[in-house]
Structure formats: C-alpha cells, structure tokens
Image (tube, protein in one colour):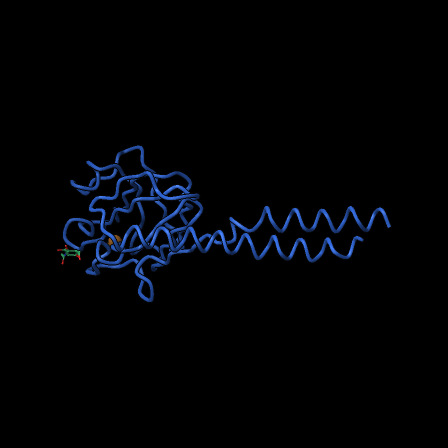
Amino acid sequence: MAFMNTFILLVAIVSIALAAPTLATDFVVGDESVWTLGLNYTAWAEGKQFYVGDKLIFNYKEGAHNVHKVDGAGFRECVAPLTSVALTSGNDVIPLATPGRKWYICGIGKHCADGNMKFLITVLPQMGPSPAPAPSPSTSTSSATYRVTGLQESFGLIIAAFGTFLMSFVV
Ligand SMILES: *[C@@H]1O[C@H](CO)[C@@H](O)[C@H](O)[C@H]1NC(C)=O
Ligand SMILES: [Cu+2]
C-alpha cells in the first residue's frame, strides 16, 4: 500500500511538472505552404506570439532551399556569415531556446534578396507577461500575451486538480 501511495504521488507530481512544456507550439513556417520563393514570411510571422520552447519547422524540397539563422546585419544584407552552417534537410526543426530577436534567411542564390525568403521573430520568455519590448506594442499584442498566460494557468489548475483527484485514492 505504501508503494501504491508513493507511486500515485509521483504520477501527480510528474503531471504537474509536465503541464507547462506541453503547451509549446510547433510553427510550420508558411503554415499550409512551405519554405519557398515569393511568399511574404514577414506577413506570416506578423501577429504570431513565439515563446521559448516553441519550434519553427521549415518544410521544402531538399536542395531547393536551406535555412540560415543570421543576425540583424545578415538579415538586412541577405548574407549568411561564413561560419554559419545551413540547415538543409528539407524538414528542419529549430527549437526556440532563448528569448529575443531571431532572424532567418534562405542562403541559396538570391532567394533572400529577390525571393523574399527572410523573416524575423521576437521570442518571448515562457512564463508571465513579457518584459521584452515588442517592435510596435499594441493592445492586441498584450491581450494575446495575457490570453496565453491565462491558458497556461488554467491548464496548470486542471493538472493540479487531476493530481488532487489521484491523491484522493491514497486515503
Ligand atoms: C510583406 O508583408 C509586410 C507586412 O504585412 C509588408 O510590410 C511588406 O511590404 C510585404 N513585403 C512585400 C515584398 O510584399
Ligand atoms: Cu530558397
């Protein structure tokens, strides 16, 4: 019986611990479309909220394009640093590990400069209201932030309630 109690307690704790990370979002760049020429990825990124723990997924025909993570200058000039290693698999997954600005370009030919294969995002910290200043803070941006935060909280509550439910079997 003591073993059972410990096991149930463990399950409850693990459920609570797992609650936050399961909310991470996988963003397929271009949504229904792919990483390709002539789409406006600035428009795609606009109005989306990216959080630490989310992922960017680039789908394209292997060899036709690639993905370089660059800095602000590389983004403006459409040049990847010589040391930068491109992602080339055609199904590239980039985990957003740190908050802040991130820039991505295609390094093939003039795809970045002429084909518009470039965009930047601002990754927000995972928890709480964002202290990072958005480029143009608007009421819609901040309400979206609160909505996500509220969602995380209510999800945590549900998991906690589930944990309590499991605990009730102990006594
Ligand atoms: C892409 O979309 C952005 C934001 O909607 C806009 O400012 C920009 O002019 C567009 N770029 C092109 C090349 O259409
Ligand atoms: Cu390309």
